[in-house]
Each structure stands twice: as C-alpha cells, then as structure tokens.
Image (cartoon, one colour):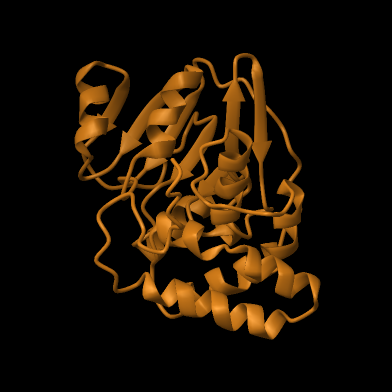
Length: 236
C-alpha cells in the first residue's frame, strides 16, 4: 500500500468532479462547500441534502452517468459511488492518464489521494490518516481529539495506532465477504481489550474478538447513528 504524503491544499474556485451519489451520507460532497470548491456532480440520482445545495446553485448537477472525457479540466476527482466496477476502472484510468488526483471511496488501490479525518478549532486543523487502512480508526482519532467520542478508554490517543493493522485486516475480510458494518458499530467494536491484546502480541485472539463484534453489526436493528454495543455512561 502507498505511503501518502500529507498536504493541505487550496481548492477555492478549483473544479472538483464527483462521480456518483455518495451513500449513505454525502459527507465529502457537502464538506467541499466549506472550502470554496467549484463542484460538479455527475450522477443519475442525488440525496435530498445535495439537492438543496444544487437548488441554491452551490453544486452543478449533471443528471447522467459518467462518460469518458468528463474529467477534462478537473483539479480533483472523487469517485463516490463504486458499485460499477468497469466504471471505477474507466474513471481511474482517465484520471491517471491526465495526472488528475483521484480519491475512490473504500478502494485505496484506485486512489492517488485519500481524505483524512479532520478535527478543527478556529484556525487550527488537525488531519488524521491511517494510510488508508482504517477509516474507522481515523474517525476515532478525530473524535478523541475534539472530545466527541462516546467510547470510554484508558489508553493514550496514540495507543490506537497499535491496532491499525488489526482493523485493516478486519476491514479487508468484511469487504471480501461482501459485508458492510455501520460506522457506529465499527466505533463500538474498537475496544481497549483489543489494544491490550495486540500489545501483548495476542493478535489472533484480538482478531477473533473484533470480527465477532463486527459481525453482530451486519444484522443488527439499531436505530440510525446509534449502536447497542456503545457503553452507557450512567453519570452523564
């Protein structure tokens, strides 16, 4: 896997082309508005939140699928819908041929750049990356930094880095099985126990526990944005 060079870049008035409707939430699409990008979305459908931005003239929507040549003049490209493998390859090939940086959600082998988790306060921005190996852990780092995490931990923040390979292996296994787990279940499954086991070189045991917890999330009935595995703070 590539070792990504960290960089902050000015995208004001730069053309960012997004291919496909980002699901389940258009987080990257809408976040670009905060940085002044000129956004063109190429998709046969869009979410209600993106439709609001389109109606306000903040995003240009081309209601169709991608065709070769669409990336002309793009400064950055984001492949938001990766359900069509031939299209994924075509978009990536065009971007690569024209030296246009591309991010393909959930497919690091089709990325020349990755989007970090970001914690911001005033003019201070901290970007967190796990080198594309575990978006869930990147989010956990961010939430620990901005004090929004609901997960209790007895470890220092950087101790989480010890379980990046573990989380990466579990993510790959789920992907190979065609299974998806909500972000909330991922967060709830990243327990202190895993850090302790990895530090004690009990990787196999840690992997078994993590996969067992994650698989619970493939058939749960938790309400959106919540997880029954989250510890409850009775003092709050």
